Every structure is written in C-alpha cells, then in structure tokens.
Image 1 (cartoon, rainbow, N blue to C red):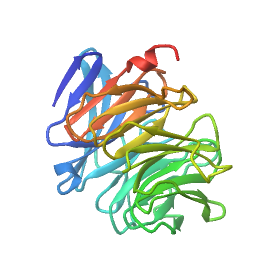
Image 2 (image 1 turned 60 degrees about the vertical axis):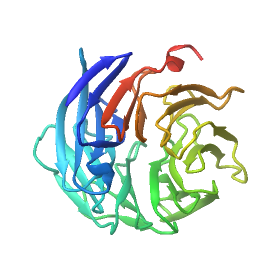
Image 3 (image 1 turned 90 degrees about the vertical axis):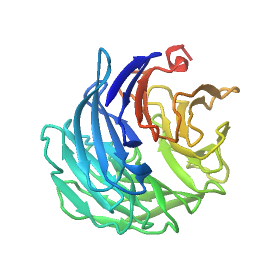
Length: 323
C-alpha cells in the first residue's frame, strides 16, 4: 500500500483492491471511506478502507475485511465512528471505526448483490435504504436487526438508492429497468415513476439546493436533470462521457454544479446553468472510475476511486476558480 502526493492529488494505491465507492465523513475533515472488492467484484472478498490525509498524501487509518466484494458505503448521520457497507452476498454490514474487530451487525435479507446503501440525512429519523440486484429496496433502522419494509416495483437490478436531503421519508432509486422512481416511506409505495433514459440507469442524486431536482446518469453516456413538478422531459441533458456513467453527485456548495465518473476512466465537472456546461475533465485513472464524492467541509475538495487500485483526493481547478 503506497501513498503518493503529486500533481495536487493525494493518492493511495491499494494492490488487489478495486474501488467501488468513496464517501467523505460528514464529521471529520478529510476522512474518507472507500468500499473495495477483489477481482473487480466478480469473485473474492472485499475491504472497507478508512483514510485520513497527511503530509505525504493519504494514510490508512483502519481497514475491515468482508468475505465478499463491498459495493457501496454510507456514514452514520448520528455517530462519527459508524458506517454501513453492502456486498455481493446480499448483506449489509455495520462497522465502528473505534472498534477494529469485525462488523457490529450484519443484515442479511436481500437474495442477490446489494449495490447501494444510503443513510437518511433529514433530522429526526435514522433510517437506511439498500438497493439490490434482487429488484427490491429495503428500509432499515440500524438499531433493529431486520428490515422495516421492502419496496417492490422495479423490473430489473437496482443500482442506486438515495435519500432526499430535504423531504423526510422520501428516497429515489435508479434501475436497469430504465426508470427513476421516487418513494414515500410513510405510504410504503412509489410516488413517481420516471422513464428517464432508454438505457440502464446506474446512478442518481438529489440536488442539495432544490427539493424537486434530481440527476440521473446512465449507460447511454448522458446525465439528465429532472424536476419532479414536471417529469415529462428533462430540464437539462449533459453529454460528453464516452462510456457508461457509473456515479453522479451534486455539489453541496454550488447549486448548479455536479460531478460524474464513468467507465471512460474520467471524472467530469459540470454546471448545468451555463451554456458551456462542461467545466473540466479529469483524466487521472487508468480503469473504470466507480466512486466519487464531494467534501462536505471543503468547497473545492473531491475524492474518487477506480478499478486501477487507486483512491484520490484532489481539488479540481474548476472548483478553485470562482464560478
């Protein structure tokens, strides 16, 4: 495991581990969690890596191994030490960075790979959603050993499940069935079904500044913005990627800025309110780029991870220049 700080990017190389998801801690500046898998997630085990920046680049604070590939990770919103990962064996794992042993709890109900997990961000509820290849979304209270509810309706793999940062009990899901769906926990059902692309949708995210705006990223190489008040057509479309878009994230600091990473090895930064919407293309990976996140503490800091066995934290030029 080697750390390199060059070209303004802090890099950690993790031999034999292919990165699937990277998420900044909501509590500790610079702390990053990365979900990884052996053998590109096709076989073998997985490792959760907890990283901190230091003078030389990135330092491994803690690592946790699981007996199947880890595909996503989410930080607790009420305990700075706690995270949940999800894996290829259909389970979710609850970890505590203050306790270097195995998971505190394992939630095993999904019958196929779990590709997405997210901890709710609205006050007053501590809930987790998970999305699986078994075509279901499950709702969890981490203090309870079994799921609270199972949401059915998608007709293919669910790749992404994301809580609304604005509306309590509301989350979005994106699927291989080419739809974006908005769900209501209280109604225990789907509120809106949006046929968002004519291709598998691998990622979605909510705008941090508008409760009605979401973005989807798909195998058709496009990003599309959706206003929930009128979903007949997208409010923007961003083109530029040359292979499937694996993950998309809205900036927590700029209302119209977002980032996407792709199987074309690039990370791209966009401002959908500008005529020249592509702000920057970052080409520092040599394999599929799967994990991406904006720092919640620094307006200019971004992290990503790739199948090239590297994790990077950096400040893209477009975020350091005033918009």
